[in-house]
Image (cartoon, rainbow over all chains, first blue to last red; front, top):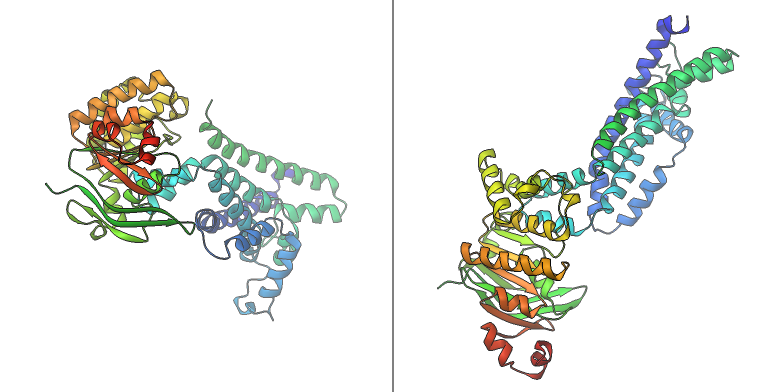
Length: 218
Length: 238
């Protein structure tokens, strides 16, 4: 049976680990940077917003190419021996997801009434307390940003293939497995893996949607 | 008596335009001062300066007789209460909204509960304590906003046209309740308004702000009956 194959679960687990870690790192980068872009007023802010918004549409193969060139054995970070490792996939996927989380965080906070900041300061909030309260007020779109970030990396194949190499027991993830099975003409296996990928994505997004919708006013 | 708040030689510029120039303005402890003026007179800018949310180009603010800049912005703001025209409540329960400023100050939980319950009761909204702030009427929301400010036991209460978005009966009831609370607590208050009736009802001292300058200040009946010039008279409707 397909689902009795331990390789399938190994590949699934690696997909979740790699994309989950990349999403978590993207959140750590995207939340503060997006907040700074939303709340700050400084020269170059619009340019930075344009860069982030462009980054939201970065093609994964372009990211894969750039990361591969940097991590390649003769590249600037070649000595780290990261090419064709799960770490390389995490790096590439973080570059894909971080602009998504950053851009959507920034848009979420800019939608809030700007006078809310004055009111929070007027209540005696420190800068950190003010920002945490703005995040709470924008929690629904911020969770949407998290879902979009995760969705952008769990489903990508180009970067994972280029920097991971699709090596069995090392860097093979669900999307690269689907490509391999399709190349080999094993359509039944490819379809089964695709359904598994969709199911996992659905379950994770359902959990996040449930958390998100608990806070919706009715 | 030392003024609680005193402005000296204040000049405020916003978007390269001078919006305020106030040589001297003071509020005694326990006094309710109404700053009245038409739209664009600089009232809201003055309130932002008093809340240390806008920096003046020059001039000094004294708080309890000492330069206010001896206090950090945070320490200063934790001694005041601010109620804006829109209640701007947080998307949480009424109780949590009133508790927010107290939590910012890291007060003990029991003290927070005591103060929140007290002020919900005094503003007549104790029955709404668990209701979502999003489900309140305009009058209820403004009562929560006032409870949130009073619960902080501020040395200075800043009110920026708190009744302007309310219908007439709601405004009238809230005005009566606020009048009673201010008399009972003797909270030093600066009320920004363009409504002369509100000013007359709540304030013991009135300052008329026109074109960013205080043109006349005094007892309400004195200011309203004897305006210093035609412009002030025109604003007062005399």
